[in-house]
Image 1 (cartoon, rainbow, N blue to C red):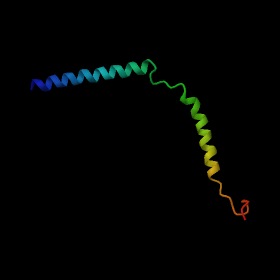
Image 2: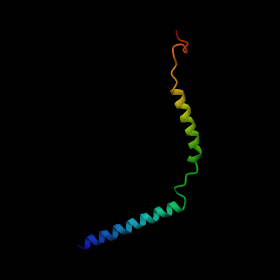
Image 3: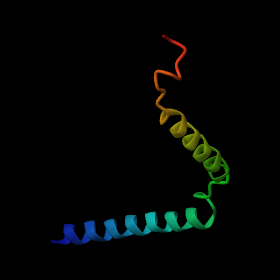
Image 4: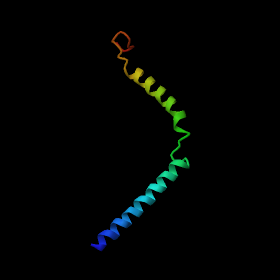
Length: 66
């Protein structure tokens, strides 16, 4: 029975340490991404351009091949 109490206590300590490290990382800006928001608008434009290009279906009259 005492082993369960020790393991519960150790698990609680480990969980609190990880929670503290996560809070520290968020507050210190570890999850801030200054690069991706600038590229996101460019990537969205590229996706729109590619979807317009692949959506075209040429008829036989539009092709140079007889």
